[in-house]
Image (cartoon, rainbow, N blue to C red; front, top):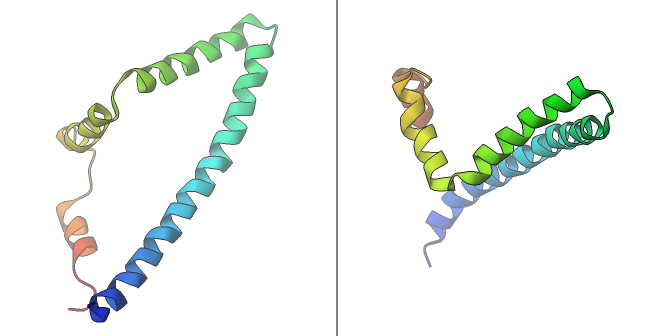
Length: 100
């Protein structure tokens, strides 16, 4: 077993785990209030407020109705085509090896 490779990989895996937990916590902190708000809007007697729920339903239907691979392709290929991407210099700095 190559312990040197393992020693190099563990810090990267730990950073990845930290990022995963952070993304999960942010998702819960954003999603829970949004879900509660939509549930309250859905139960509302006010017609104008309930029309907002239709927008949310359309958004959910769009993402449920398209395969995940199509969504990834749109993000990966579609956003850069419309200039919604990071600059190449910033990306190069981010991907540069830390031990150079």
